Length: 94
Image 1 (cartoon, rainbow, N blue to C red):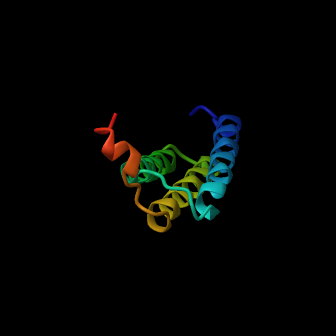
Image 2 (tube, helix red, strand yellow):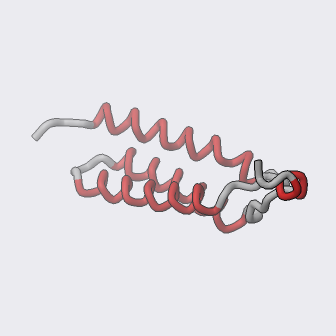
């Protein structure tokens, strides 16, 4: 079996970085992310974490993916739903 420990560490580190980059969106009370975007990103990251879990001891990748998925889940739950701005609605959505 091939040892993917170094690759797992790199992927996991990037996933933790991605999770950290979502935090400003989470804590900005005016930030609004489309529910479809945050929901599908959350789902995809949980699938990736599960995939890494089945590939052997890629624990750093699993934990990094779970951290990133959890951050996106928090954005999905706690950020307001985006609505069309009045200017765009009056302009016909263009």
